[in-house]
Length: 227
Image 1: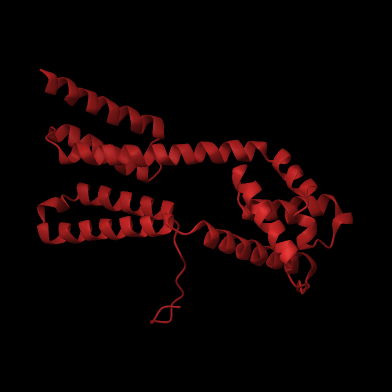
Image 2 (image 1 turned 180 degrees about the horizontal axis):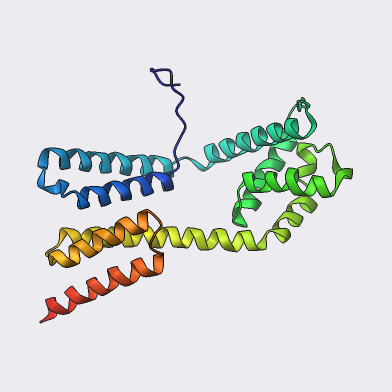
């Protein structure tokens, strides 16, 4: 909890990237570069975002395993209480802790998170298979459960992979568009990029259309530079 009494939650690096991308779009649209005192703070904010991303990516593997295990247990206990209106009071044994670690790795390798898996276990599997109620940590870590989940969610796996690829491609295009705006381009092209950036950030323009605009303007100035 912060000093002012409000509750603060950790923000994922991907969401921070999206936030900073939108800040740069607004800065470009409003010509903040022409106001050095203000632009300086935008740059400081960008540096802070960079530090956050670096710190987020340098969490030790051992600590990540520990954090992921605690998250799994917390979600399981919450789901258990919602399903049965009873608190899960069993102690987590070292064997179960190891099983959770193995399960989390298996899910990550398959492109899923524990949230996805536990939502399926409690909302789908246990509803359709009441004989497995009440569940235990050990039972939901069983290979039968995990393989059933992966088999039933192949489309979700493919969709998640496409979303991640699109997200990376979008961030790359935002950086390339910003690079064009910082260069010597005609006002009409600059305005076109700004409008496209805004449309993409507001999800009014698809990734494919965003790419066409950026690549066409890049090619235009690449050719003019060769003359």
